[in-house]
Length: 285
Image (tube, rainbow, N blue to C red):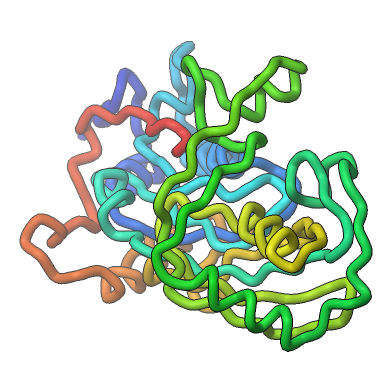
């Protein structure tokens, strides 16, 4: 029986199984790497396991795969991945995310998180747990939020964070409407406080923490951030750690996660596709 090809790549049995996978699953992104970096590592591991020979083509142009939303490099948590036809579902199936964030009162940084340089320090001793809980009510529902300068948002095709690191002058993007479904204080041990946040797309938890500090007549910066849920995918139940990034494990995860998605005609039978179908990479979202 002749071997099939995809994108000029000769497929063995493992590769055929890899290129037949289609749908959504979730992986765990640790602190440190970017979301794009995690996705590239996942691609490399899967293609290496499949023994794919790319005949000089870049590997990331062979496998049709993408993620459902950037998670800051300093953050950890669930990162939803689309493979095959699942890449077309990423923007429509992942409404809403949940985060646990630890904020630090009394200090502000240029990046709004612990990776940046301290730009301001203010006293915070006067702030009580009740003060903080009262302020949170102002940040629930539909609110206006200015995105941070260090972000994946782009100007003239380049990320604002890249321009900032080069020392170029960058103007803040205008405030935009975002949605906070729920916001609660889980712990208050000054100067640290822990929040649980459920929000819609385009929301920056770093900006939220900074804005809370300003509302309290002090300043604040985000120390830690964990995405605990993205769409219907939870960190505890669905996110595969790196030791589970194998073709068989992902196939099982795709099967398990099928029940999380709406049973609509356009989303049925997405588990497999013809291995010979042309595949292209998805850009970092």
